[in-house]
Figure: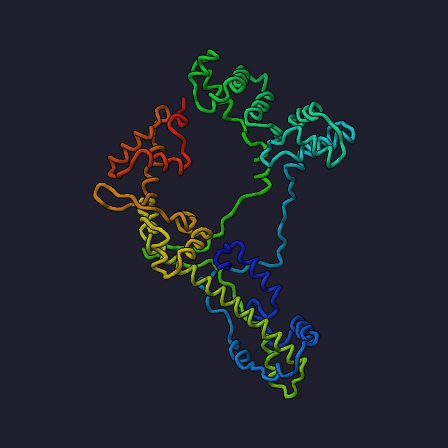
Length: 473
């Protein structure tokens, strides 16, 4: 079950760990030579150096290794469910590595340009260290002062700390070290002073009407500051260009793109769907040839002393552990394949067309019944795995949804309703966005029996704000 939860991207590391811990387990290689290797010889010698156990030699008298000698002769992994017909990458190729500067390192570099004494620098470094990755300073000045007093034995005042915060707020990226969104945006606008009257008006709006602006109560702002429609548009354009997370750009740039490694591939071959597993899910594992050879040598030998028998018991233990791991990997592959194949059959129309409205209602129980697996097992597969199709890569839980009845009594997936709801909002006039009541009427006209509160719930699940917040001038 633990292996089943491991994503494909991490499975390779898990296998490497097992290979390092168990020398009786190895990856199949075409040019593998039979016989003892230096590594397995060392393991054999290590086994012979075991301290004598309490008890007589009788416990070593009857050691049956026939099943080990014969069982693994042709033990090459035969459970790969996908072949990659791609040329192997050159393992000797030198791969470039990025040299990155973290967000906090960037701030400390700028701090080095300030002409301050050692004491002040330590205070400033404490402030920089308290800044979150998104660029905000959320710790209270009193807490920073306490940290300095207790951890570095530096006595300071809130006024001194505030003065240094103001200096750090002049660092790049603009808006860093702000305590909240309002201060962050105002810091950025202050740097733009002198670039036109719209900047001055934007500062007034965020200073005196910040709550109204976030709630899009534009009429109150216009009345309060005597702004025309054109002036309000200029102010909005100035504000939406600002960065609400100044530290995010640096962090994301250094973190790089986040890639999803699919666990399954579904291809359309002349109208017939074909499923395959990512090759990383099915490594070629087998019992070490060296360990099998050691057992054979022991079996051929006539004189078997206690130390040899201890070594053989050690080898059997390692081989049993390797066999268990190979079987666990095999079972993992079979469970993944059976679950995904059942999902593919259940949602066949979607995988053929890519049309979300063709998704059928499907819950974990539906797949569990068809695969004879426990619901918790299906849940583990659905929550942590991805499938690549010609229409994109999806998390498996994307295909699970509840059902909703239409006027004709037909059951449709809630995913289908959400797709239509999303399309309606996308096609609305942003000057007069559709209310939840209107969206409910439109969905009912299409034959979907749905209540307004359900529409509101689906809209929130799609992370779509209410009509007033979608309004544009």
